[in-house]
Length: 617
Image 1: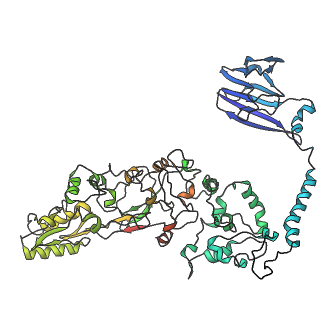
Image 2: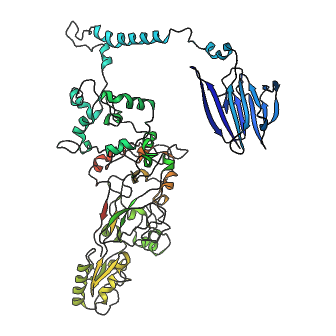
Image 3: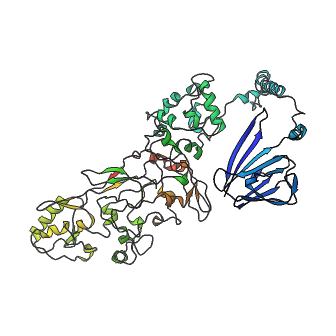
């Protein structure tokens, strides 16, 4: 059941304007109120005048509200049922509503039009305006021009400067002078040193600052300049202009229309980076500004690899770059998260096994005293350590993160514990061969490395010949348990290099430090406690992020405009949106990222970041 309303209004210069809208409901409210479904401007109409109800079967009920009346067939009625096949006409004040069957089955057509009334009644709105008491528009226009010239030109020129030195010679602060109105305003702090050098940016009088002038300093790193002087384009300038749709806002459209006459290009540095406004120089771009290009980019750039996105709520699924370790050397490939992606890092590490609180790993953790934050089981921070910025994590190493539980000790002699050299299979084989030749059956490498061997001095059973060495590398051996081992000869082995992806979302910004709160533990985003596959990609999808982040946040959600995750300019660094810490209890807190800028300036490029760990042995 739908109402198709066609409202016809008269133009001031003659002619009519027709506006059509569809309402999916079975009741229409007619009146002068702004929330009425059919709003009528006639003063004879009450705020809520009548109600039209769809009864089905091509019939409607028209009922007046609060003692009002409607005219049907020249009769004033309070309630009446009508057949749409008769095309009934309802009169409300000076408006008529023609009802009928719509073009689509089940639709009800309503045509609203003001019928012919005497001229004095048709012009009733003019009675309540001040137009007849004011001067004409021409007089007002010339008066405003004269006022502007007098106030901002004649007054500053003709007014003498006040004396700044008193009779005794003491300097006094100068009083206000009208020519201060000509001051463009203070520069931003980074550009404040140019306050006395206008020509540094303004090449020509009355011409806006050009991109060429900006890029003379910001095009690249130069001796003596901060690395943050480098500003990369958001995209190729030609494709950038071709990709944008309608410019949002009247001011922006006006600037695009008249700007070229004053040296203002449609897309330029000064379009976003405002100066002479003090400390606030670069306001955060609104989501509507971003959506102007990205909501329908594929229609204007068919060859783009970017998906269309209008709002955060309709954001497409993440496409992280993961490490493909299947070839001779690791490479990055883009995938769409659907919960089934696999990433072979070369390391066998079942998360659920290590994070359990009841299995042998938990018992071992309690016995060895390896605990995370006082817990009786391993936690994420036992193996994963944030970098100094708190944004990402440093590579895990055997010595720091694994050796507490996975010892490589294989013998003890006179209180000295002998350990295998991690990361060098040839050295391991050579060291074991020499040891076995010298000591024979005194001690031997364990078939599966026993945790705590260095403390207990327990020795493993002997194996005949080279089987003692093979036991370390083959199934059941210490190296085999954690690494992918390949036999390259009768007694030679190669260990698949361990590679970790340093940054999965190269085009987005994510800070782990901002999410390291009690309200958001690691397991709330990463399904580590239920996954024992070493190759499962445990990245959260966009739906997981949308539970806490929203473009229009509800209770216990964080406001997340586009710029909170995406920087306008390509390259490493924080997004344009600088977040501040929230003091509300129970809310996800965020931290200011400005303090990490210097560290991030030396980070690797956003794309193709792979951190390769040393070959494990």
